[in-house]
Image (cartoon, rainbow, N blue to C red; front, side, top):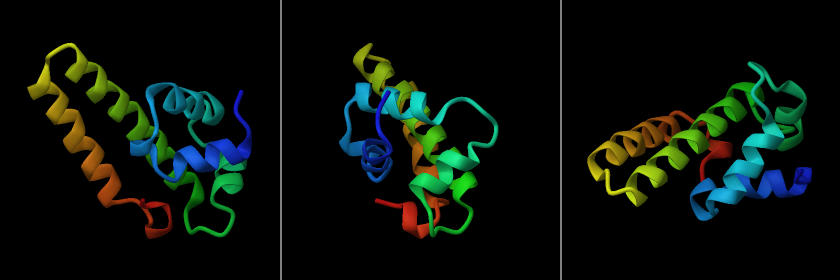
Length: 98
């Protein structure tokens, strides 16, 4: 399990992290509907920290899916997931954008 500091680092720029880092962050966040304690650790002063962490989690899942599809040669389908990532990013709170 990663530390809170490592989770903050990965959440601050998922695009700059490798697949194992994203998996580590996803495991740290967990699959709960609302991860309020973890959200406040990552974004203590942020507006809507829970929703923001949920969005970052969704971004990571979609980014991992897109990467896997690209690796398997399914570029067009990967592009669909990358567009989902773009949409998620565009709606992130400014403090969570990288």
